[in-house]
Image 1 (tube, rainbow, N blue to C red):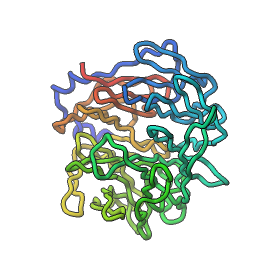
Image 2 (image 1 turned 30 degrees about the vertical axis):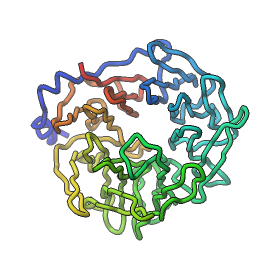
Image 3 (image 1 turned 180 degrees about the vertical axis):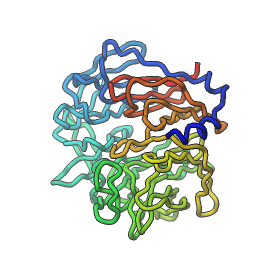
Length: 386
């Protein structure tokens, strides 16, 4: 780390340093937080360590008891999808709470649609993608995927032909593979053998799946990038004698295709891409060097521009694969150690915040104006312009 500090400092912008500040969020009534989410209106949704569901707008409001602290809630469309303390899907609405006997995968996340929730559920010993809707007082599975998906998959709603927000269909990392590339950097020995694009109502394939002989998708979620009014998936590929590369994936003529790919890292070396300000970045080797690079599309290749080192958006062996929180105006990037952050602005300038957090960063989320950091001690800190 000592070798990287002078290099980082050389990119700092004194003007931005004074603008973005970190401060703790007052959680007197709620207590220590285990999980949280943000609604599209910017409402904060919390699950505390006492298995309680809370909402905060101007003040804290308790919504439910007996909910899971292991499964991340999804708040959208005036509903909150989550799990009860036994890990079964439940749905909070202003009128009632719907329960179910649908077991959710504890490391996966959910996608909220207008009238349904897409979630990963365990069925007959396999993890499948399910569409869940309300019927009477209960929630029921109305469609289920044919192919097994990653147990920690983050299904992504995407419309390849438009810029967000959109009403697209579902991309998911599928076909668990524990033989092709045994690295285990993301918490287990399972990687995805393919990417699927599924119709959101039926969960039937909308396009020819994407596979790579001798390689896997070493990721559990996607980043997205908007370019010329179209949205593309960003994933990570590894294998065939190489380490991880960042790949841009598009949909053309009914097929998922790799549009461009970066130069791969050495074998058993990984990277975590993210997008900010319509630009593509990655932190290469976040457990060793923490090299922040910016990628540019040149034909079918992603060329990289090295920015700095000593940063990390992934803790080794963790299922949370991107700790960068990107607002419309700045991105918060953890330094190695996860108790300090740097700020990347829309001009590409970096600033280090001197504040040292009282615990390591566990998860992050962002609104257009604020970034929220959940710490391992249950506190929430906010990064915002002052």
